[in-house]
Length: 278
Image (tube, rainbow, N blue to C red):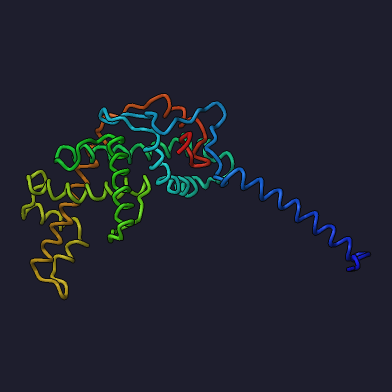
């Protein structure tokens, strides 16, 4: 018969047994509840966050859902924070996003910046429809394409077929990837149909105002004169394309909804989550 421990050792073993039992209960409880997710988006007092599909604005008649706005809030939030800290020496405390600086709160600035970026992408999508690159500029059409692309990638991986890029695209990553691709394709099409005309006088004016590009016009080591010239032409086309796109975005018809106005008044930017759930 084994002698049971006594004295301080017995007390230590008893405490250890109690802790083990408690931890076992906690682990079982967590396992029963399933994986713990991040905190849900919380509405500021008096403000109801829009659902992902809820329209927060229209641009040239195209509905902009809250989930699309969230993509650009994520993109522009850091810039907004830096702007107010640099310009107004603001402190990023609990009241930062709802405090007016120069007549504008950081939340208003962020949403306006995001809306400006969405206007640019929406106009580009409309051009992509015009030139036959995509069938629709709607966000629903984009989501359908995202689902199809991720299914294609999953199938390729299952069949051990090589793919380029991520195994699965996130909503934001695929959105930005497509917009970059549309920009490249549209520049070529606008050059081909004469919307962006390329002639020597215009190139000369461009080089005169862009000395950094003019330096490239001189044949670099290892590059032919023809290649150097074409590279300059590509930079000129890109410059003209961006100017046309910026003008079209600035003159686009933007209609805000009550949901967007409520977000500007609230402080959802503090958490960065301005959609009820994603």
